[in-house]
Structures are given as C-alpha cells and as structure tokens.
Length: 283
Image (cartoon, rainbow, N blue to C red; front, top):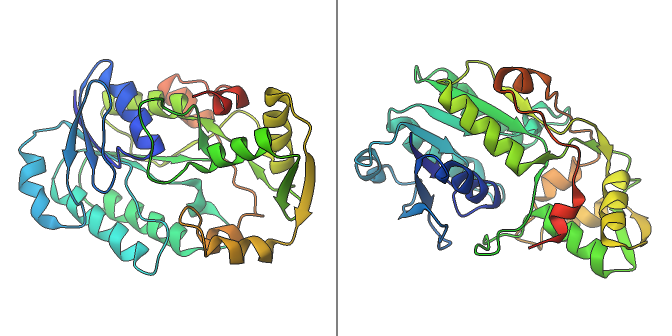
C-alpha cells in the first residue's frame, strides 16, 4: 500500500511510519518538527491550510493515517477541525487515531473535538477505520525526538532518577496502556482489510492503577521511590505552565480510562501484550 501518515513527527505517528515502512510505501507528514525516519519519505505541510490538498493528493496514497491533532491552547479544537477538513478533502480512505478520552464520564474540550472528528469521518462516505487507544507507550526512537516529550517517557525518567514520585491524588485511577507496536500492527491490519465501520478500542489486556504503573516501572528500573500523593489542583495549575500538558485533561485524570481490547484482537488477530515498562527505559 501507499500510506500517508499525518502527525508523523509525534511519538505514535513516528512508530506507525516505521512499522508500515517495512512492507509499504510511506510518506510522513510533519510541520514544526523535522522528520528523519528510515524508509519514510518526509513531506512538510501544514494541514490547517486547505491549499495543501492538491499536493498531498498528487502523492496518490491508498490510505491516510490521521495521527495529527492539537491538544493544548484556546484554538486547539478549531485547529484540529481544520486538519480534519484537509484530511477529508483528500477524498481517500482514512484511518483515524482517536482516543478513549471520548468516553470519559467528565467531558473535556479535547474529548469533544475527538468525538466531532469521528462523527465527521463516519458521515463523510469515505472508507474508514477509527482506533481509540488507551495510554499508548513504547520505546524511544534513537534517531527521532518529537517536539513534545511523550508523557510515559517523562514518567519513566522521573521514576528512574528521583527518590520521590508525586501522584495526582491517590493514584487509584486506572488505565490500560497499549504498546505502540501492537497499536501499529492493528492499524496496518485494519487498512489491509479495507477498514471497519465501528470505532475500536485499543488497550492492554489488564487495567492498571497509576500506582501499579509506577510500581512496575520502578521495578524494571531497579528503583524503590517513595510515592507522594498531592492535591490534583496543584497539578492543574502546573500544567498551565508546561507545553506538554493540558490543564483540563489533568483535571479529569482521576477518572478511569479503560478499553476493551477484545473486538480489535478478534478482528485483526493482534493480541495486546502485558504492560512492558522495560521498553520505556531503553532508547
């Protein structure tokens, strides 16, 4: 297949590009961050501008994997919508990487934007597939550094270096981290079968509390840090000062974010691996 991946300079996008490049022709779309991935042709373009459509359509891809989005900032939803305008304007099959955040009990602007993207894609009449990953993680790429540090790598670095690891609240909220390799394999399988008309969740096999996630990372690193529960409001205020975190998402973080991996595994034959924290500690 000929595959165009948006958001290719991000963590998930870069891993998807490399997984696809093993058997397919891949173009990686980037904008603010340079892209240098083996076997992947970089294409610099701003998806927020519709005038990029003729140039991207001229590449004649079979599928567009839409992994680009804007999370933080007052114009985030509008910019994400503009990117989806361009993707839909290509008139090609689309695999959309959404998020399990659309199912959170506490609505967020980011979740509403993701849900709106899904709705527009489903109503477009184009062939499509929608994947909703829960907490994707995996190894750093030695030859690639995203502009924004992936949150699991930030956490792993803190656990490996610090004697104290702060927790947002009690740390009992649960996630089902999905390995980026499993996510990429499922995405490729969905494209190879021509898409799927129902959104599919991508998660690990077992829900883990944040405390358990930190504990497993610490064990893999040979560390025993002290866990320090702190008020959520403190993290919400700090998130406003950091480019990698959105305060509204931090405010909703103490809700469970679970995913049922069964339907995706049955459809694609990709069985999600148990949480593998050692992958977070290697480059």
